[in-house]
Image (cartoon, rainbow over all chains, first blue to last red; front, top):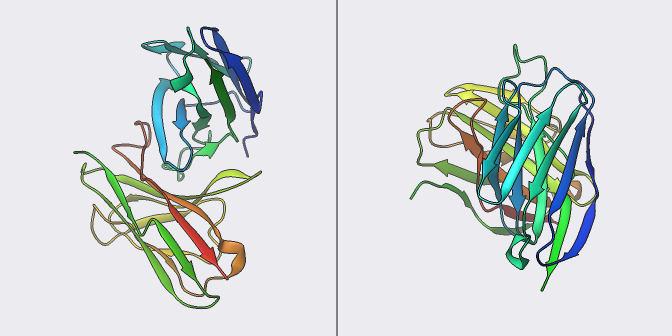
Length: 116
Length: 112
């Protein structure tokens, strides 16, 4: 089974900083990876999905990269704002897709606080 | 509006009293799944479904049942709830196994 690690577990920064959140996994045979945002008491919102054939995806101030060989994905947040405060989670399916389409493993998330 | 709808949002019940949490999506998605989220343990998959009448176990299926009789609905059934099933539950759906996942707003269940 894949082991998923998100570092740091919590991060508190002043507004305007550029941030890097990390998601590490143990098996490099990864098909894709999603980054989510979760606001307190709410469901998760998919931010970016990177397929294994891609190296990165961008959406506005967010950029996610995937390096299968090193077992790592990073979420880069440019010019952070207080509205970015949330928990950010990564998730991906198991390598043995055959009979497990629909399975997903989640990291425990990085809780981000951006203060004015 | 495209969405995943879970009901109820909050539920308090007693041990052993059967309950059902409903989940419905209006996006014609093939894939649906249930997760529970617990402090310190993160988000864990309970069951998932690839299509109507096709379901499979996730990481923590014990004590739960699901059914997928229609494409849009994927109810989660607790036949005999116990206090260790107190948790925040999420339903999610997607077009394919490799598409962005859409989540409901969650159901906070307390079993006393």
